[in-house]
Length: 79
Image (cartoon, rainbow, N blue to C red; front, side):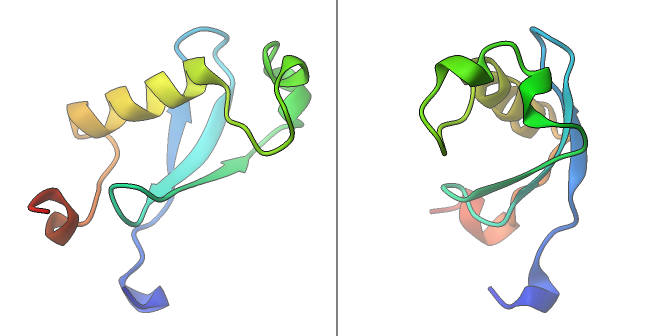
């Protein structure tokens, strides 16, 4: 996938704390997360190792993919 093929970021709200992040899925395994606010807005974040995603946020991102609110490239869905 080239940068020109990258999908735009979409807002995803955590179903637990309501923190909104921008997310892009450029493959089934790759997820880019951009925080709109300081990541400390997530109450779970301080408990996690650096670089680890809050499991509640991960669940919300997964739910957004399954509901169609967050796109994954069609070529990735058939693999």
